[in-house]
Length: 228
Image (cartoon, rainbow, N blue to C red; front, side, top):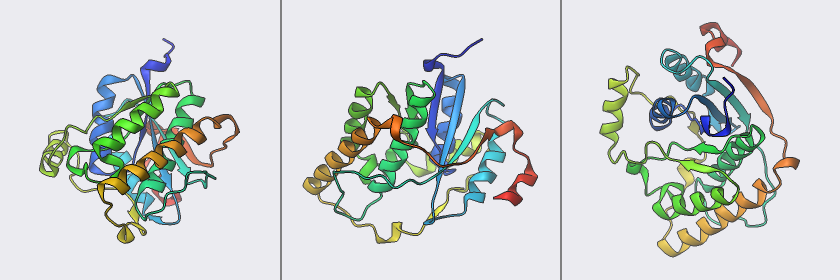
């Protein structure tokens, strides 16, 4: 049976605890998932994400896709002025949105969690602004683990699901320099953040993504680790 755009969902997948639980939950809601992992010079350890994919092979549908995309450099009018995760998170949303739109998919999911809702991109204000921005482009935002308010609950859920509790995400070499933002500055930055997302999504037909890997998780074998 041919799938329509509402049967599919793109998930920005880090390999961490939250995006792993998100993948499991989304697999119960959508018939087809595309897991997208971004790689960059400042992100170390993509082989760890691979290890999480191997774990998930036992539980996700065999048609589930995994895509690795090299972090692009977008020229955006609304520049962010403070050192946070927002620039990379903006790129992640743009990448996921472009993959969704080019695949005629109307659903994009992020692994944002309730216990990390003080992180700029995961604050309630940012989430609602992002939801509104994507809706204008015909994309519905899904946050399948935003209801998880405590890290211990995430750990317990991983155990119940039969998955390892360790985080298998890449290590960010920039995150140590992040600063906390006051409420007013945060809102200003979020407004610029979503404006930049909207700006690039509108140019989707002119944006080319550098795909490093794209395949079904059922076709990924243990020996493939040597190629990463």
